[in-house]
Length: 296
Image (cartoon, rainbow, N blue to C red; front, side):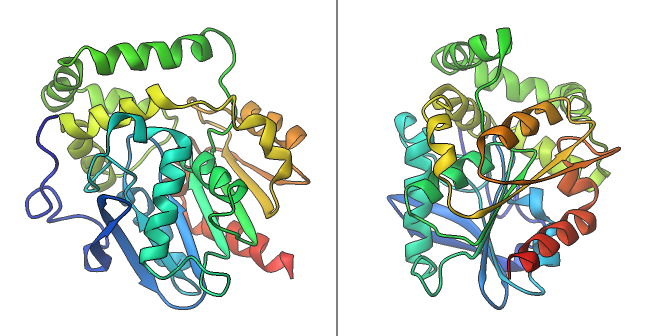
């Protein structure tokens, strides 16, 4: 494993740095941001990202909630677990341990709102199904919850496993990210337009081989086929938010989810892509609060 990101160097300009803390839980040292006051809201980023993804949405929601934003295992500044612990159930369990250590896991202090971007939405769904959290509202932000269809779905995990097992590929990926316009091309593939500061944080992550290896290891361990049959048992109210321009997880994915999930609310936003919550955090935040308040 290559050297991990250094908080004092790579994290010196990290968004909401003043809210950051490092916590030992489930055998890992986690980087987690906690801000605001009130009932708990848990926000989870997607594969390859980190807590910076909620740089604006977290403060917006912190006006009403105690917002908790961890870096997933191996991502950003959280320690990397053993390879097999990068699976969906294991990451859900690890996050449950983190919430327990933070004192935010019981019936009176656990999250009443949970929002996940991309793969983060799948982790939250697993946490709900395993009774690790019991939110009133579960929000999927361009969620990657169902297995991919077609050739992409068939090749996704095998290619990721080959990538990780090669040993040198994460280092090559990180080198390319630092030396070429590869990160810019990757951002364009999301269908989103983000500002230079947000772009710089993605470039920092993509240029670190340790982060890249963990992100690909997560993809290699991902099994959404095992999650799909359980989705109809989800208990919280559901809000699906998707960007019409998302080229990674297109709106058709949320339309498929709407047929499976129990009475979800679906919002398709024009002109926004996979990183919709970074492009327009105020609009996303307002939709979340409206959905939460409508529960009664």
